[in-house]
Image (cartoon, rainbow over all chains, first blue to last red; front, side, top):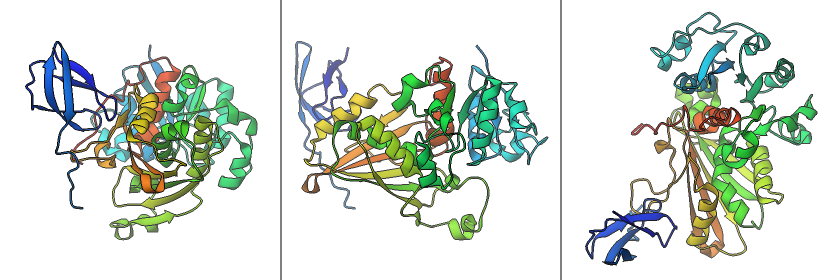
Length: 59
Length: 351
């Protein structure tokens, strides 16, 4: 069963697989922001902003 | 329940889109599609995309005779043609969805100001519900008379409504609209001749576009304030689609989270509004290219804190969410149907 958590940016529900490993990247279905899984414990997931956000297309 | 539908003035692009959507609608029977010019011809002679879907022929009946056979009549007539037909149809008891601008504005004085004529039936204006389900869903349920929104107005209003509801602008809202060639209708003119139209980014109405009147009307209702809109319209090198880029100046720059809340509060459960705000995808903001063929309105926003400016972006298919799609969605609400019926298809990609 995926664990559902709220996106800190836009408030959408993000589903994180319950077998996700620390370091895995998950992204928000609404705003596309990417998070890195810090840990999963007792059905709760800790996420932090992934570092690739802010990529520039050079346009 | 089968609803009998008449499409009056079915040979134009909006008429064609109404027929295309209604042909796959499971609760609808098209009893007639009228066109004086094409009476007796197969519908697919004018709308070739409908070949194989129907052997319906255009009827040459007048609007009253055609509508008398139906539960609801869509009027896809040129502006100022509907204005005279509507009172006659009202006498027959048929429900009406008017695609023209003739019954969109609530204030009769606005017809003089924006359309240059005194509305001959000012008392009838208040009988019509503005056919944008995102703003008028409850009024549309069971409504008898609906006026479908203007295409660029629909895009601008959907993009701006959450912002105007949640924040107070410091001055007029600037709406920059870009539209494809189908917005000019099915009748050719020298300016739509391929050699002249292809490749343009034509500012065809930098000031005073008529859709500003309904944008002001609807944003004033949703915000509870008197909103003024400075609109510029451009014809661009696509057949379908509208992008509106709207600029709102505030007294304080909102955070992304506040903006998300405003948009989610209003559109969180809307079946046809999508948040198009992707940090990493190919399409990071609304783009008409990925709504073509669908009833979706894609919305997004950006903030320029330095200037306390919020940019509200919205993309629609002008003939669907901007016309026939919103009209059928409104019809579904009028008749207590699932409002997605007939419209629950994804956009075509790539196109």
